[in-house]
Length: 610
Image 1 (cartoon, helix red, strand yellow):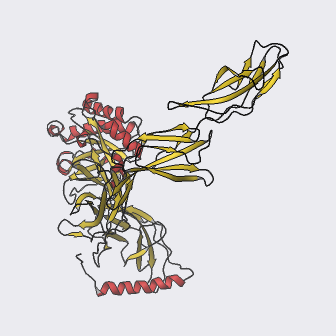
Image 2 (cartoon, one colour):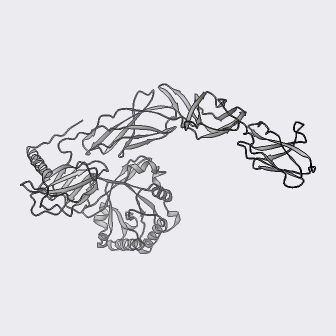
Image 3 (cartoon, helix red, strand yellow):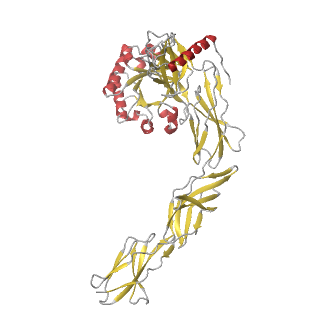
């Protein structure tokens, strides 16, 4: 790890005074020194924050505090006489919080100013159908916003961007802030109006966080017009968009903004400047900088345009006080808290804690049995989703931090290795069918690479599933204390033996089974109606139907007189002889998996026909 040491006695002296004053502040009950007001935070360049505040007339200087938390963890990063500070040495897309105190040379310190915040960088992409099918769920964690192309030219559906609806729907579904742009070919105001209508037709119903940008860069059409004619086009387009209630902006490169879009009306609209460089040299005010077309974001195949949203680009930084939070040394730490989890049978998710000073993270992977780690991702976020892996395999991951200034690059030591065993496929098409009155047969679709299956049954006495067996086949007969008519619930886990242990599937959903129907209860007779006897009973668990038997003597031969469906709980026996006693009994029946099981009959009960 290369370190830069630039420690000056003067800085140490100032910090010594600062610490002394800080201690005094801790024991002071109150001060009469005014706190700084009108504190503003801008982001005029990537990974740079400009702080400005009004001078306090009686103050001799100011403390500047920063933290990555809104209400704790604040540290002094500067002590000086200036009422501004350009903060550099910040990390990635981190949101920083700042507050200022004023002080005097006799040790009086003010209360804190209001806390202000700014991101060190607000990173976005702009995309069209040229970027193909984007996995926005993977992209989301790596960007702050997206600008989507709606199409190009006049208001014709064939000139809609083929990926507009997909990209817009995904951003809206995932809560990714987005704006839009249209590539212009306009050569007159009628065409500019049509291009505005083209945008309004497509964005109707969507909630835009960022503006609608008018992309003026076509040299063969718009580029041939005069400055005033270009202004007329922009005026027509922008007014139409603004009248519809949307924010509007202009996209062009530095050359066009400097030499071609010179009509005074262009100062009225937000500017998005394209310049593929380490800095944007456009001298005017702009809100967004497209700095490269060669970016990489996890979830997008190939290159992608990358941008920074900025603020305060019109402010002169040359006469400001610069503060580098990494000025004494650059010590890039290796990522901590690296974790890997299997998210499916062929994908993993790697996460880690952010590292101060890191602008990128590099993820390496090795499959068990391979001799070398391979670089699989470079990301600005603190997670990586790795797909298309081989299920049932064991993988190892490690991560390092990275930063650089375009000339010198810094890499941290690797994090500790993390191992993950991928899930194998989960068993499907599970059946739990009666095998006998005291057993239930489980069967399922075999998992191709499984070497066994763990079988779990719910134990209501303890309120959880217990493992009852292991099977090498895709079937199992459970005869472990199975009671007829009782519902049992099962779950399965497929397993595969690996060199370092056993790889498992996810647990299946619960499947219920019953061994034969329960015995009928609540069986009663009613002879209130003349010439008939009405039978009724309670539903029996697991019954598909009910067989009803009748006899003229209690111990005589019983004849089956009716089969009732599972939903019936009554039957009326007719054509009976007046004054004669009849005996009845009933049993439940269940047919499943080609096996028919019947409960025992109820005890005979009788009534005399009226």
